Every structure is written in structure tokens, then in C-alpha cells.
Length: 382
Ligand SMILES: Cc1cc2nc3c(=O)[nH]c(=O)nc-3n(C[C@H](O)[C@H](O)[C@H](O)COP(=O)(O)O)c2cc1C
Image (tube, rainbow, N blue to C red):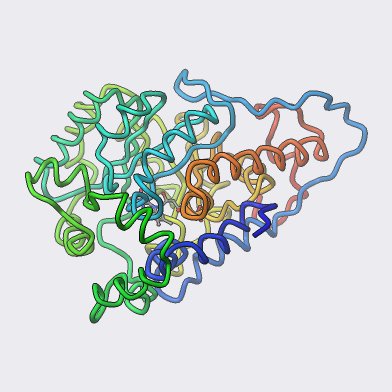
């Protein structure tokens, strides 16, 4: 099929991978109001078209915590990526390295940190969930440090998994799930050979390494549910701040008060995010939440954002609303599922080209120049 936009990879992924995996990527919590609002609120923000601003050379590079990035983009953490494509996390890390941007490896990745770091030592970030098993948290942080991870992304919006209706219907969970997954795999022979056969082992590499036994896909939801810790609050986490000496980013902030708490906790960065609409259905979209949080934290932390970004123009909008960098979730997951590492690199170059065009037409030549003055302000930006 012809791919001309990042969103084309969604359809390409749908054709390539079994439905239970496609819906796991594509779906959100509850009736998916927040998932839809992330996309529609962001896309509805009008930008100011300017004329003859003389932006001959557009520069897309930026830096955070002294680390250079060729684009204001980060491949965000996506659990189970190693099921979307063969050893998917390694492919994502390689695509990020080739594109000179960071990759954030999820706690619940198929490949272990060591497997990813060995193939791709450049600018590896690691995402950690808040878990009941503090022994696991400490073990995985030590592994991350030992593997050369530069930056920790600490996700705080999953004290309990959001209800994902689609997963029960698709076979990701629900009755006869493994049988349904097996039948679906037979309808996608390319994926079945490439990932199902050649992409083994299919376990959660970081967790298996700690437990000393295989934690497979069938244990995934159970392990996640049993290990999330809804009782936790900021003071319980101080040991992590003490332990991790490098930059630490708190991911999953949607409220200005929580942003101030994260600041007091010692976060170097915050990701304004509702987990791509996968947690609290009815939560505010990131585009709406971002400006107020930007005002609340000022220059005290590096502000990142995600949820709903599907084009280079969307990236520009997030930057104009106050973010200094943007994480990609589904945009990268679709591209990986559809075409592996080359797909992810191509998707990134599509976004980069769209950014160049949008910056030219809004009259800005570098990432540092982007602010709310490029928006034709609506109530979202106020
Ligand atoms: C399939 C999938 C798995 C995800 N797994 C994780 C994860 O393991 N850790 C995490 O912090 N966020 C996870 N997220 C959330 C993303 O990092 C990101 O916040 C979200 O996808 C952004 O929204 P977008 O997909 O609309 O870009 C996941 C998202 C998706 C789509």
C-alpha cells in the first residue's frame, strides 16, 4: 500500500499483524472519549500562516539535559513492542539511533535492557512503572544503570490498569484468549513466521530476568494488575530520586498541582500525558492540559508532551503550547508493526518533512523560536 503520512501506517499495521495486537495498540480506555479527544483537540488548533518571513534554513535539532537530538521527538515507551515486529524494541532503538533521537524502553518490553543496549548503546532511556515489588524496581534500575541508560522516565499514571473493552473483544484478554490469538495468527502468516516463530522468546525480558523464570504474554495482564501499586504516593518514591543520579522525567502528569508535586519531588522533566487515552476515559486531552501546566511549572523543568500526535504539524502545535519535546506512542507502534525499523525511520522522516513545511509557513526557522505566537489562538491556547 502507498504510505504518504504517518497515519497510513495505521492501516498498514492493521493488515499486517493479528487483530488482537492491532487493537491492543489502537485502543484506549472505556468508550475511548479521551483517545479521540487527544487527536481531535490537537488537530483543531489553528496555526497562523505567515508570508515572506525569509526562513531559508529550517533547523529541527534541539537538546535536553545536555543531550543533542536531531528532532524534537522521542520514541516513547510502548509495552510489548517485541510482539509487533521481530525483536521490536531492538528495531525501535536502531531506528532512533539512525534518526539521532532517543528511544525510551518500556518496563514491559519483550527484549531486556541488556539486549537493547548491546545493539544500540546510543541515547537509551528507560521507563519504569511504580510497582509493589520494590525489589524488582531496584533490580531493573541497577540493570538500566549498568547498561548505560542515560535518562529515567518514571510513569505515574498507571497505579491500576484502565479498562480496555477492546482487549476483551479482540482476544488480547477475555474468554478463550489464547485460542483466539492462535486462530488470528494463522490469518497473518507473514507475522506468524517473522514474529511468532523467528521472534522468540516471547516473554517480558526485564521481568523474566528478575524472576528467574519466563513471564510470557499470557501472564502479562495478570502480572501488571497484581503488581501495580495504587497505595503509593510521592514520599514513597524518594529512594528512586536518591538512587537515580541522571535526569529523571515523570510521565503521566495532567494536572498543574501534580506538576508542582513532581517538581518538589525533584523531577528534571515532566511528560504531560494521559497515556494516549488508555487510562482514565473522560480525562482532559493533553492539548487542553498543556498550556496551564506550562504556566504552572515555568522554566523549573523540561516539559514534554504526548498523546494524539499524528503529524509534523501536531508536533509543532505541542511545542507551541509549551512542550520542549514530544513523545510518539502509536505513530511509532503502527510503523514498527507495519514495516519494522525502516517503517519507523520513514515515519520519522515524514514527520520531519511536515515540520519543515509547517515551520516555513508559520515563519519560524528553529525549534527554539516556536511558541504560542505561531497559533491563531483558540480557547485551547488561552
Ligand atoms: C500499545 C501501547 C503500549 C504502551 N505502553 C506503555 C508503557 O509500557 N509505558 C508507558 O509509560 N507508556 C506506555 N504507553 C503510552 C505511551 O508511552 C504514550 O504515552 C501514548 O501512546 C501517547 O499517545 P499516542 O499513542 O496517541 O501518541 C503505551 C501506549 C501504547 C499505544
